[in-house]
Image (cartoon, rainbow, N blue to C red; front, side, top):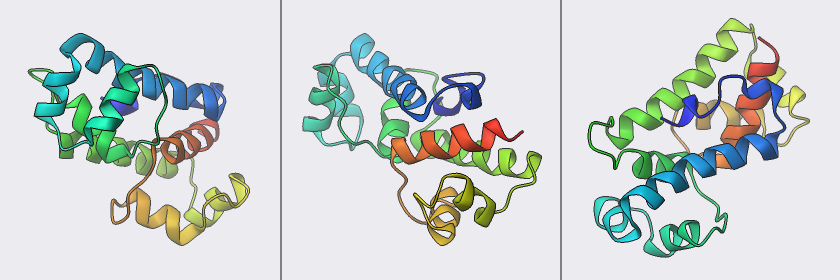
Length: 141
């Protein structure tokens, strides 16, 4: 699953963490093939082909979760995305952070309302935003 791509996200830079998440997604494509992943997901085929070619297209957590759900025995896409968001919420609880503290800590890259909406799953979250939030929140635990 997405949130278990690394054990200590707070010890990495946002770029390193994002690269690890993308690598985890790319590994599914490499092991199952572009065609299988295209047929098994709702992700734009061009995005899947781009990942397979070693590029780093902008992915949402939902798209990454859809790809991570492809291997047999994996949780479904909604579960993968929900667990990733819940990891952020649990981290905020453990570190005693509210969305305003997170906004301040990430130097306003996202507004508090955006953070709340994205973590709750009401708005799409990019994989880079997930890395940004994961890195900051885990670093404050």
